Length: 132
View 1 (cartoon, rainbow, N blue to C red):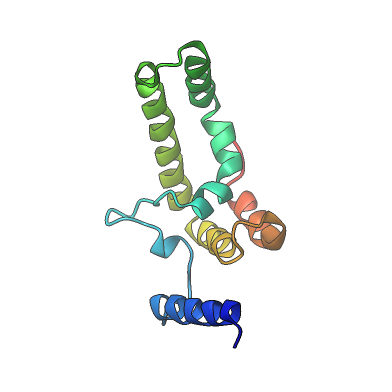
View 2: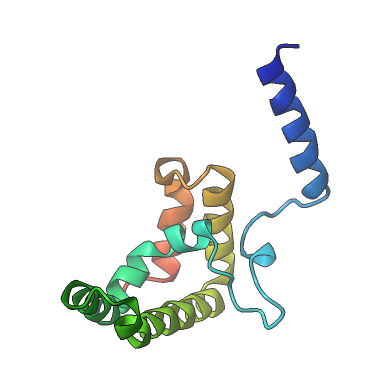
């Protein structure tokens, strides 16, 4: 085996051991002890439209603060507001449409956050949890 192929072989074995017996790589493994979603990249990417819609005011306020004052300490409160909004939204989405979110997040995780490869799951998620 070539060195590159050998690396991928061992990487696959390592990842395979970590995921052994795990058929669903979605939200069921991306929740904390309280059942709240952990904001992994797949979770955030899958929820990006809802985050942009529901947390727009908080994000705009944070960006304006950052633009007006280069001192990071001045915008900590605005950053916490964004974080609170996103975590609350993820909790609500997970409670409202668990199955569809799990499937979409699992697809995004499996396909390294490639939206084009998860359109079917995206459509089901957006139908179950429309922008309101």
